[in-house]
Image 1 (cartoon, rainbow, N blue to C red):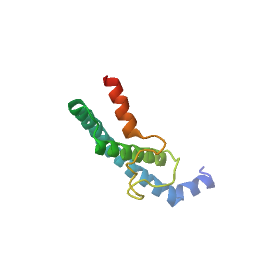
Image 2 (image 1 turned 180 degrees about the horizontal axis):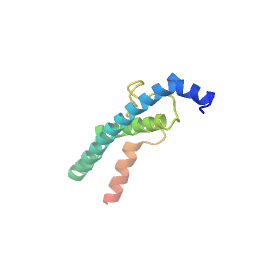
Image 3 (image 1 turned 180 degrees about the vertical axis):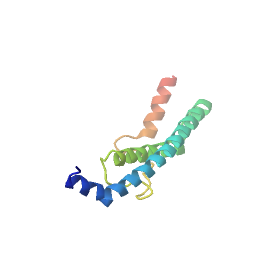
Image 4 (image 1 turned 120 degrees about the vertical axis):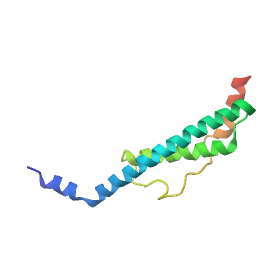
Length: 113
């Protein structure tokens, strides 16, 4: 016998809509993961060849990281906010508490010496 609460939960439109969004963002995550791997490989290649990091790729990597984090928060029910394209694309600016572009370059320069 199916309880009334279970019947009500199954009939709830919002959970089914969320399920569809979860499928959509599961697919978007796989694309974002592929792009992130490409950014990682490009940044490594540029660093290897030029000895410097590419600031545009740092920014893209930053915003992709935040985007993927937002997707996971939504998929794990830790957030009700739909990620991009339903909100703005995450900023490519590093966290103001941690300037990643400078600290990464300094760290890489120190390791090279």
